[in-house]
Amino acid sequence: QVQLVESGGGLVQAGGSLRLSCVASRIIASINAMSWYRQAPGKQRELVAQITSSGRTDYAGSVKGRFTISRDNARNTVYLQMNSLKPEDTAVYSCNVQTYLAPYTYWGQGTQVTVSS
Image (cartoon, rainbow, N blue to C red; front, top):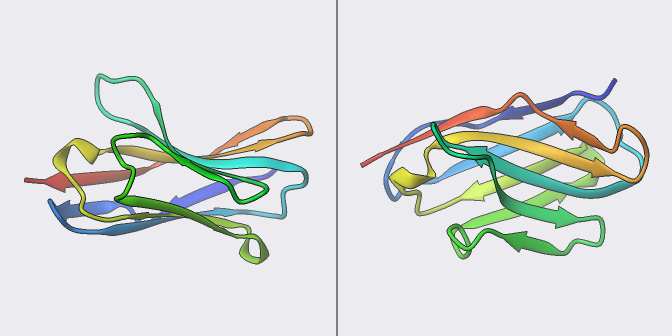
């Protein structure tokens, strides 16, 4: 069973930066896309950023220009560089991997990001 482990969350002041990492316990075959989601208290989970197997990236409008998603296939890792953080970025951030093979999706346990004003 593949496990995804996130790290890099924490408390930061507004305007600061954090870099999240998500490492897979082993190589995942037939990856379609790797993504970061977030869920703030009382809100629905939302897609923050995604990178496909071809390297195409997409971002939520609220983070475009501030966040950058990247991947290191050799390290089975996806990153989320977050700059110019705002209090509204406060949430639990989780990574997700979508595959063409069952079970088709994997989730990490999440890492807390708190941005103080």
